[in-house]
Image 1: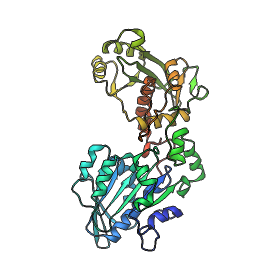
Image 2: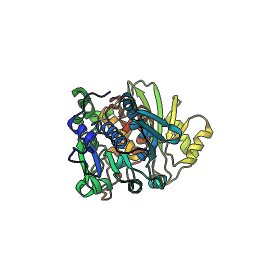
Image 3: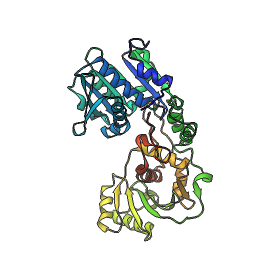
Image 4: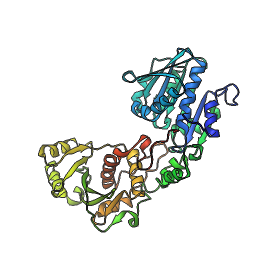
Length: 421
């Protein structure tokens, strides 16, 4: 059981008590750095408040997906509640958590708010309170629908999130002016988590640079500008030799009118090297290639090496089937979450887990051109130019490093998720 809380964490734990200066607030907002200790203290406080103030009422716990919610918040929460002597019955198949304590019982429904259609999931229920884990990753329509369901007298709203763009709807409507929403606002840094040692603080700070350092380490709501991968450099990420490799993977961004980009990757000593590449621009060549011709190019790129998987742009369904029919290579659709993929690539570049052989000229060229689009409406979107090798790079990273991730997209090599976040 946690024995020490920081001053800010204690404020989160106690803000709803009559003795607190925030007790008349309708909501609490906790934002800031990753691993700063906001998630667990917020969820513990939410349960303590609901069990103290209500009996036989319904509440909502919301995440981007139910799976991420269970992994990041519910599982560690249950462990601590049971240590406190609280009875918990988690009905996984129904996504319902029943909590009993001192003769009281309340129900907590788990919801995923991943897209605009998610708002329909929460319609019809009457709630006494709602907690949003990673609120900035949810669409406004879902959050608004959940808030509208809180019609029980004394209901309150609970939010936590890591920063995104300063144009994000949640920042503009809630974070920028919390008094207008009658909300208690607390900004967290990693120093607000007493379980992190100086060594771990240094380790996390070394994970990111540029945009992601400012958002996830410093906890700032900043606009994405300039190059997407400013941490890439020839000195740090380009090598002039091909090391001995133990595993091989190919990543593919498929194109007919637009360029097609394939990269052959080999693992060596914990890093992955883009050994060679295939890049074909039909506009420059004046001839479009068929799926079978691209499959020939793919087999040539593999060169008889024991390639364990070919990770292909998920929209290229016909090309995936073409490769599968040949039977010589194992084709798989890529994960195409752009923001998560860029974050994963950024960390791997900074830590030299992604290296590029000097012969991969098109990939190296695109690093110097791949930039953020100017946007006044919130989302971080790269310019859809000079992005074909960058897309196949992202597919590769999502497949390889995605297998090493824990909650929130951090590499397991960095550290396991802290018990207090």
